[in-house]
Image 1: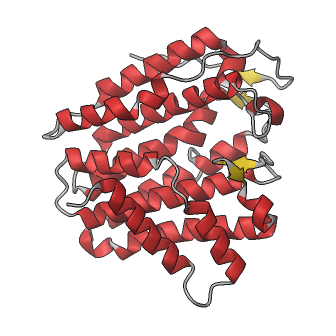
Image 2: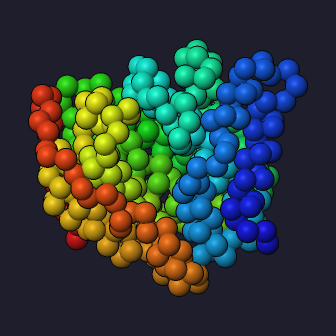
Image 3: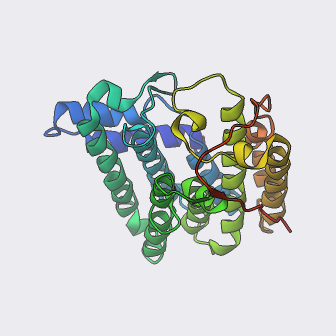
Length: 300
């Protein structure tokens, strides 16, 4: 089988080609392609493939559909996150944010197209897993929707009182949970034992991101600049780093017994490198004027 990363890029290329085929308004087509390429870290497709591989998935095409859908949904969320209504971020992945290049209206439509395209990708591989495609659709919908998906995570930023744990769960962890579950579904296995792995990885990722953000000199798109909740601001640097390690430990303990467990754990060793080494040179803790309901995660 072709390397999963190569398969993912090829599948994303085909998906974008379909979304931008003849008849697509030129600027919309350019914006869709700009949102997906060049590649970011592709963490979610990589994780989806790793779960499917650990479960000896018999049909890589089914995993292609799930992994591609997850990345299209993630790319759509980044486009939305950068919009003036939310972060008004100048840069994304070292270049101008999509709305800065194509305008706000086209950016909104490009994000819409990516979301719809994600579910189209699942539909295109439905014949491979006809008895499980409904479950996969629901899993992805919950990961990006409401009440606990990415849409809810974005909406928490508009609230006057913010539950930090619920915010992290919705903004980031929900799609990671959908990712590990989708890998199991594509492999024809029960997704439930894999949900906790994704949930803890997503929480760890968001903590690492908060720690890095607070230690950065950047202002564009930073949590402080936009009044977003940040674990370091609310809990302090030491507690945030400790919780990051707790979440990583919980994710490792949650890995289910399976035929490819050793392979999956080797994958996690590499996958978690970016989580374990965040920039902990945080600035002095700032005070957020909005009341935030503090909630420490208890890891058993």
